[in-house]
Length: 74
Image (cartoon, rainbow, N blue to C red; front, side):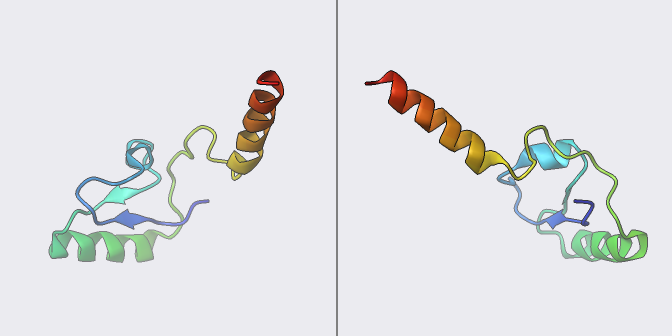
C-alpha cells in the first residue's frame, strides 16, 4: 500500500515484509525508532515490494479451498 511501516518487536509476525522492504524493523531501540519514524515522515511513501498473495483476497482463497475440500470429502 506504500504506507511507511515500522515494526518494534524483535521477531515480527510477518518477517517477509521486512525481507521485501515494505516494513522496517526498529526492534526496541528508542533512538532507532525515532530515527526511522522521522525518516518515514520526511520520505513519505514506502518503496518496498508487496509480498506475493498479499492482495486482500485471502478470505476468498480460503473459502475456495474449504469448499473444494468439503466437496471432495463427500
